[in-house]
Length: 257
Image (cartoon, rainbow, N blue to C red; front, top):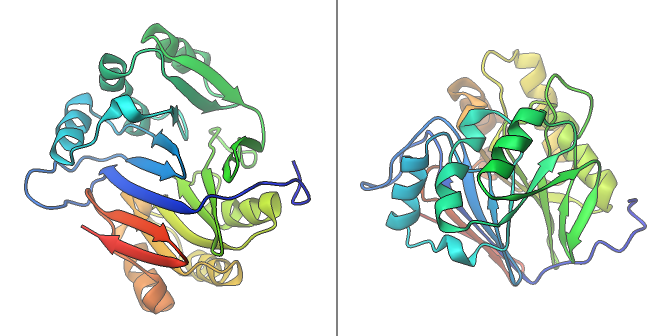
């Protein structure tokens, strides 16, 4: 797939953080991991499932989410803090299709299949529906990881990432080259614990270069990196946590929770 391919677009996008280690309001449980419910046009997508089935169950119920409405799920990568919650999903939505990145360990694929899911591997950039795409594995890394990309009318791309093991500074240009559109929003883990100031500076410049206006660095990004982006990127930096809801509609972005 190339930028010349018609990627399509959606009119509206909503992202709701179901699991994150940044606490939200009382009644929502934090946990070291990530999961989000993504409504892209008429599709409802579960992106990752967090580390603990009971945490996902608690937060889904507290946020009044009905997993029966989920059309398909995406696993960013095979680590347990993103995959383990699928055992709860299987109780509610057996038979769901789960897209995993090409190169995922056979044991993880067999485990998901054993839970009753239909597993589809994504070898490279793939269009699932108009305006809804998966990157497939972004670049050679010690672990295969993919991002979910939603193209919103009059806005550009929103990228939902898991841990960014291939490097967020590589994922963002990959998304741009895949779609030919600016990346206006990024949310997820950036895996920057212990990252040097030089690398953080390069990442900040990359985010600016590709048009990021809304940056939600959560999960494994690390407090030092979060503080750096808050100071360096000013208004583009946004706090995110369990229960954060982002609504993109008619060229506007609203953040709740």
